[in-house]
Length: 488
Image 1: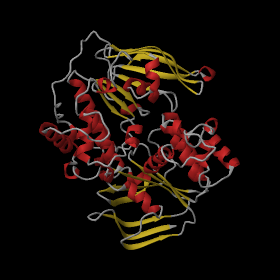
Image 2: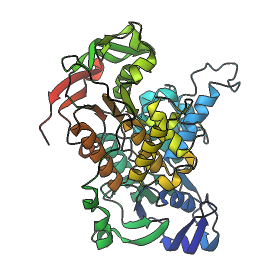
Image 3: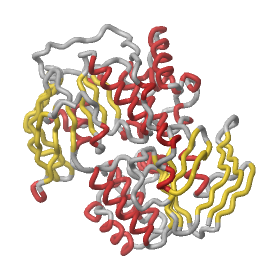
Image 4: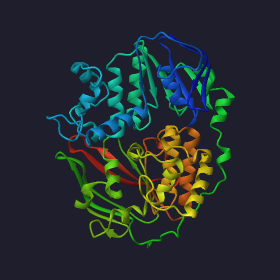
């Protein structure tokens, strides 16, 4: 078992993480829930033995502990990126990185177990594909297979469900339940109380870097303090800071996006095949489909980040792609957030400058910052309750706080087109609701339009008016269904 008594763990020069009492026994399954910045990821590292106590008693008698987190995913993506930009390539390796099978077997080499785990998680067909080309959900499943290769008796999962579609979440919960039934001790660190699987038998709650409550799940979910966690009344009245410039207004008769027979392929396999789609003024679209269907690829065509965008019949804001516009002509109309953007934001920058970079559509700030932009950035930070962290390094924030800053970065210029690809990943319930209200307030102004991707149906803002659904047709790949959404 693992026991902690009066444990205190140093997070920084000025902050300690506190666990008054905790006992995790063999075969138990725990879920720890807390808001962004409450210390959830620190707790995961403490339980996994990656953080030493400052004081108190900490005894871990589990023989083999494994941990999986969003930060580990970011580190692995960074490693693949560095591999392709240094002399780390071996003589017989090309420049597109390691395969899924190689990632799974990075610590334990066992081809049969790798195949069995990949079959269990539905990614056997991806074993020979390069890891860098996998979707967010597919990379999550790959890393979970990697940690299970070592057959741990205590498995710690930090936000395991974020970035997975409904079916994948159900499959993962079922797999974790089976692991629990087989005797593996499980610890899940979650933002959502709704994400607590049925098989979990104990729940803990984190507030302000302290484990404040714990106990059997049934009793905990009836606790008044936990009910207050979901009380969102104080979010009812707020205003968004304005744009730093006069807003650009486009003709209402000009389609914002027009794609004719869109086609994107990878190694002769069609990722997008024959998509004809038009987004008119005033329409707000939710894009739905399973992991790997091509949703993020479609968005990258629109943002100008995909090279095959110029080989497609695509018009943005009334201008044909490839007619002489620059990438900055495109991006000045767009605010954008995605998991890949979060992973790509590697530059050393302050929290305030990351937010300000949204005015310049850049990763990092390389332009002179006006007094007005500085003032507006501070207003956003006040809205985020992060003004006291404005001058700290961006990567010193928790993962959820980083995501809040990147969402605000997408909104600061009140863009014509707001593209949000899984924007709420890594956010607790309170901050999810806050961001949804930001989006609806921005849309109420009547200037911005929304493209929204999320696997959680309840995450869709009230403004959604249309849906583009990627529908699997087995051997024929994905077909596309366009519908109007009922007013929420």
